[in-house]
Length: 141
Image (tube, rainbow, N blue to C red):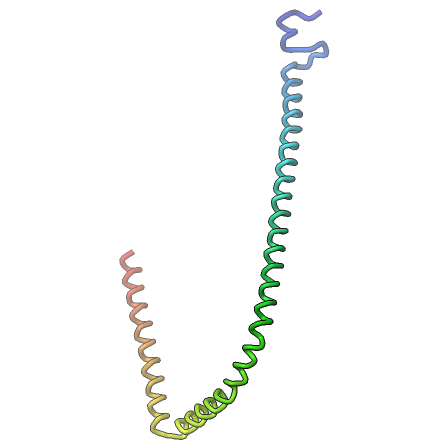
């Protein structure tokens, strides 16, 4: 027979009672945690599905509006294109002729190359200035 103070901490087979209690609490806690996780995942899945449906309806509405706008804007754009095409063609021809004339002119070509060289020189000078500033900052650190 077990004594009273032993009975509080051990069972008949010698196992500790607090171990059984801890195991039962852990198992019960695990069941609770798993149930909570399952409910949370269900809610998340439902929210995700609702958001996808809303996005699809918004996308569908946007496609309908875009289709209507294209139906209205299409003929207007075609008419504008028919009016602008000859003007653009003549303007393009004039620009092309002007560029041909400038490229054949030696003086203009000299100015273009001088401008490119000046731009390159300014770019290099600014680069050197930044490098000097960086080196000064590195020396100070």
